[in-house]
Image 1 (cartoon, rainbow, N blue to C red):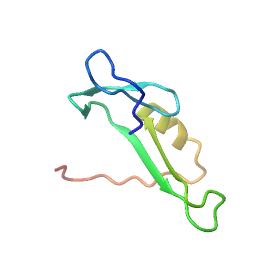
Image 2 (cartoon, rainbow, N blue to C red):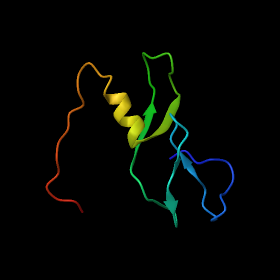
Image 3 (cartoon, one colour):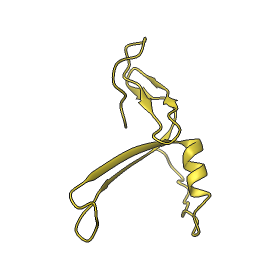
Amino acid sequence: MKKADGVNISGETPLYCNSCGKVLKVENGILLEDAFEATKEWGYFSERDTEVHHFNLCEECYNQLISQFKIPVEIRNKSEVL
């Protein structure tokens, strides 16, 4: 998760959505709302060889992004959550 510089009034380091800038809810170091987190290590045959990119999207921004895909996201449901 992208941590902002500084600490908020509750003593937590805030996390942000990289797209809209929304502050994601964190309490006692636990993210209280779900977010999409991506990390990509670029390799050979790319213009970004050796770069590592990391970003977070709130659920609203994630939904907006995937709504633009020509091929829909594959969605599977889990029957059990541990």
